Amino acid sequence: MSAQSRIACPLDFDKAGRQVGHLRLPHSSNTSAYGWIGIPIAVIQNGSGPTVYLGGGNHGDEYEGQISLVRLIQELDPARIQGRLIIMPATNLPAAMNHSRCSPIDGGNLNRSFPGEANAPDNRPTAAIAHYVEEVLLPMCDAMLDMHSGGKTLDYVPSGLIRRDGPDDPLFARKLEALKAYGAPIGYVVEGGGMPAAGGGIAAATITCAADRKGVLGMGTELGGAGTVTLDTLGVARRGIENFLAFMGVMEKPATADSPKSRLLKVAGPDYYVHAPCRGAFEPAFRLGDEVAAGQVCGWIHQIDEPDQPSREVRFERAGVAFCKRPITAVEMGDCLAHLGTDWQG
Ligand SMILES: [Zn+2]
Picture 1: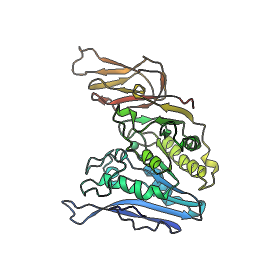
Picture 2: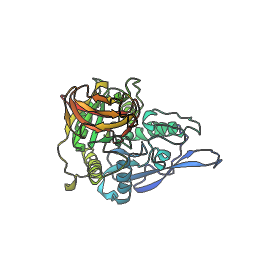
Picture 3: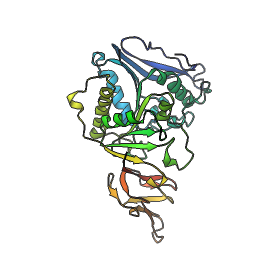
């Protein structure tokens, strides 16, 4: 570990076997003058082989990664792997403990905070976590799988995702193979730097961008959401971890990890997204996973207290697969209602 960080790690990254502990992020607060935030971390190592980072709880209200990584830490026999796993089940621990997307301490959205700051002050722990992951953990790794879902405000057909860092992305061919190997019902490619959903302000602030900067083979997921988990989404999460580790040569692919072939999509621009033009009660006109046509009605926004006012009709701008949907009826202007993918042509 050469990078300077305010975070201390009690584990020995070179020791064989299973170690579980807590990173110590100094946090001086009104309730604890000399306190630290304890962020759970596990290192599981056996023999020689690649090092793989497995992350969950980057967003605190996305549970598939958090649950499947806690189980992995408890259940994985180190003898089953050849190499090393660095496991962070609740990467933004304050957000995970608050069951919220962002940290309640600083409002920080970890997956918009990379590369972070080496000397982030105590009142901005999210920037310190981002820096530690990018500058201390990822440089030790060959590959990275960070597990997301739609959280409380979106719901996805379970998906794996990769980022294409421009047309000359040197890792792209391998990322695409990893995406196929992961084996979610959908695997999709996001073009460019940031989240096109935000509509502009492209910033390379996600953990997949951090992996690209460090030359680490990185992929993410959107495994479900709506603030909950299901047998189906957890099944995809668990099989996906094993498929990814088998792809990296860290473990044998178990028979139970067989997965259907992923449908490959891309998400390429603002017209893939539908946002609410006003506040109100959203009535959807589609089901999650539907194929929709350009101009098709996405739904209506009703003003329940003024029934004589015409409801606003909202349409899809383009054709595609509606594989992400807002599960909450109450909407404000600017909320994302749905987004599409279109078939990946290579
Ligand atoms: Zn997320």
